[in-house]
Amino acid sequence: MSPAASKGRRSSVAAGLEPDADVLSIAQLYARIDRALVNELPPRVPIWVRGEVQTLSDRTGHCYIDLVDPDQVGDRQAPVLKVRCWRQTWGPLRAQLERAGLDLAPGTVVHLVGRVEFYRARAEINFVMAGLDVTALLGRMAAEKAELIERLRSEGMLEANRSRPLPPVALRVALVASPETEGYRDFVGQLSASGYSFHVEVARALVQGADAPVSLARAIRRAGESDCDLVVVVRGGGSKGDLVAFDSEPVARAIAKSPLAVWTGIGHTGDESVADIVANRSFVTPTECGHELVVRADAWWQRFVAGPAGALSHHAAGRIEAADRHLSACRGRLSGTARQQVGWHHERLAGRVAALLRGAPAALGARAAALEAAAGRISPAALRALGAAEARAATWRRLLGAFDVDRQLERGYTLTMDQDGKILRSGNGLSDGDVLVTRFADTTARSVVEGAGGAR
Image (cartoon, rainbow, N blue to C red; front, side, top):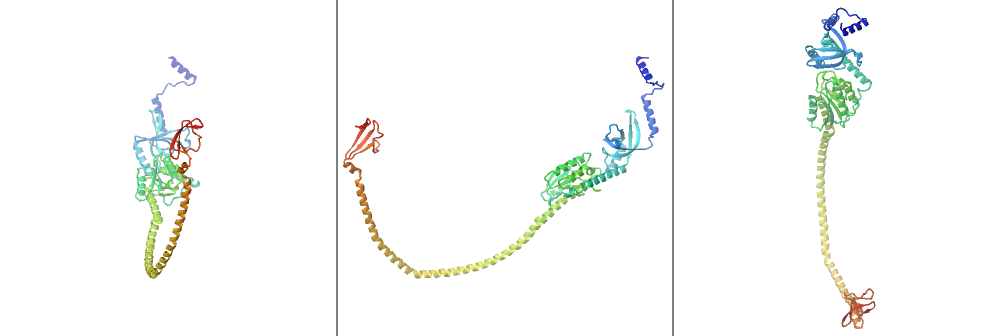
């Protein structure tokens, strides 16, 4: 016996586990397990299993699901059942779910029927699904929807958005939608064809799929914080499974808490969604929702613009006609009065002219006599004034002659100037070498200053 075998035997003996003569191979062990499962859970006897979907994947047409007990979700030690649904079974089941508006997603509690299978290659016990209880799933979803509605009602959320004020004309619209979809085009097409100046700000969002509830709620909150008049959520129809996001709690609460009024046009033909219930107003289709906005704008236009403008136009026409009649009457009265005034002034002017013609000769004679008398008085006065002026002039001539320079020079005075001809009245400021010009009555002499007090 080899040392290793001897050591293994000693360990077994020490543990009190003496090996049997018949040692099983792995294949034999798996065969025993397989027979035990077949005996305990016969393949032809359907087994119903209830569990919550933990993970789900749809690869190459096959469906793979991990199920856990609903009351053990989150427990790391909770047993996990590996569910397999092959293509030939999963295809019809998936179509049935879509027709019923159902969507298997993590967190969904399902009732499955199938058989247990031992997969020897991986030593896995799998559950091969052959069907599921759609009725139970529908009932559970309806119950969850009713429970959500009741919870929202108890919190006052069902009426919260209906109390939001809405302008008479909502021209600025925050649109929560998936652009370039049919619902988006139907809604925007109604506004574009209206002829009114609608402004649409698009808040992009997923409208179906597992991420749709969070995406829609985020877009509704973003739209509610804009400076628009109204938030509109549209979806261009689809199966119940496509519209399940609009029954979700995140979307319902985002609508209820929006500071702006929220309208929905989800395009459903069955029961209304939770989003419709909590919204300010709901419409069956995006087209109807857009049409209602156009109708409101048109009603406001007719009431406050077109109607008053028409009434004003009609009233203005009457007033203009009345004013025209009044103007014609005034024109006639004014023309008659003007003719009377012209005639009266003409007569008055003619009288004044006749009186002027009669009084003109006498007035001219009086004026001529007065002029002649004035002329007689002016001539002597002028002669007297001229004589007095001549006497004053002679007196001034005699006075000025006494101060004549030439006469002063003839009397023996001299006139001293600098070389520039400026008269010097004092010797201050003279210096040696300055040239002085002295004027006498009969000649002129030049001298040069020498010393402080003498000249040559």
